[in-house]
Structures are given as structure tokens and as C-alpha cells.
Length: 189
Image (tube, rainbow, N blue to C red; front, side, top):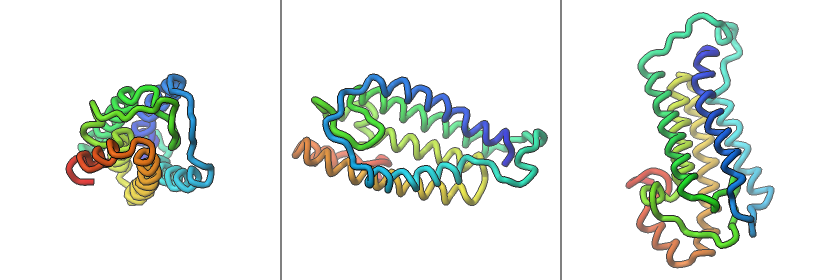
């Protein structure tokens, strides 16, 4: 992996992050927030996983400005990054002001079941996982698989916490939604 591959991975994520920061100003007021310990438990594997997937090797050749070759798998990986991030943005836009970075309940929280939420209960997480898989394809490193696994575990934990809250808040409508729509992967998981 070279610096070019790192830029190819981080570039789309930088655009996504800029949008995410701007869109966070549109959120409703929070009435209940996940505690700090739970958030830390979720964040540590997420951060380590992202570093494993995206950061270049420390070997000298990784920082070379030569060998900017991308093979077919890497181009497909870039397309998967863009598709995954686009799907997560669709989920974020559809969720509207009910969104937050951590597990929260918002004032007048609404149960959204349309758009990407008709395909999976957590399209933002699904899209990000898809993009991480694409990033691992671009970097072509064993540590990308480990990073993806850590990020998946982090988001699976977050899903579990979030779903407990949503089931408690929305009751039977959310339990019905859980039976009808998969959490992260349509028709599978």
C-alpha cells in the first residue's frame, strides 16, 4: 500500500465526514444519551479498526511517491467505498433530525421505516461497514480484515444498545420492525 492508496481511501471519508459534521447541526434536542463508559467500549475498537484499515504501512516504500498503480480489486474497492458512504448518507438524510453520533433519544423521536430503513434497520452502519470492506480491498492488507472485524464488533455492540432503547421507547411497533427488517445486511443479519 502506498500513500496514493491511503489517499484513495481517506479522500471519500473526508468528504463524508465534512457532510456529517454539517448535518449534525440539524439534529433535534437530545433527551437521553448513552453513558460515557458504553460509548468508550464502542469507540475503542472502532478507532483501532479504522487505523488498521486506513493508515499506511510504516515501511519506507509506503510513503514513496512512485508506484501509484491501482489494480482492478482496488478500483472495485474505491467504488465500494463510495457506494457504502452514499448509502449511509441516504440513511442519514432520511433519518433527518432524529440522528445523533452516539446512542440517544431525541425530543419527539420518530420511528423511521421508509427509504433505506425499509431495507435494514441501521443503514448508516451498514453503509459504513460496506465502505470499510471497500477500504480493506484497496489497502490489500491482512490488517484490513482485522480492522473490519473490530469495526463490525463495535457497531454490533452499538446496535444492541440502540435497539434496547428503541424497543423500550417505541414498544410493539419497534419489535414488529425488528421481526420484519434485518439489522445490517438485508435478508441475512
